[in-house]
Amino acid sequence: MDDDPQKLFTEAVLHGLRARLRDDVDALDSYLPPHVAQLARKVAGVLEEPQPAPV
Image (cartoon, rainbow, N blue to C red; front, side):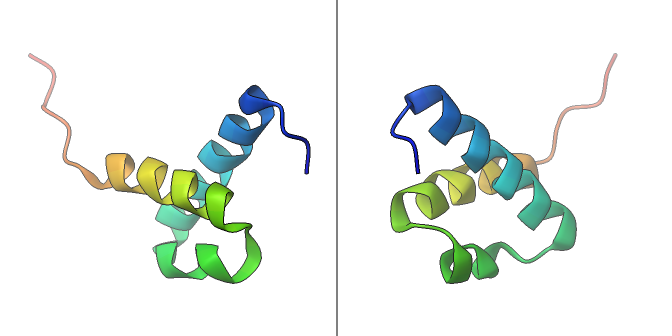
């Protein structure tokens, strides 16, 4: 994997989004390096929080 921080972040966002959509965040650890899985979990966690309704 490339150590470019932007690529790492982008990969984590994509994996986190996919995991949240599939409701399978726990699976991240089975196929990602630990540092990417950790970032992806953070992304998935943010996506889980309810958002305020527009006014």
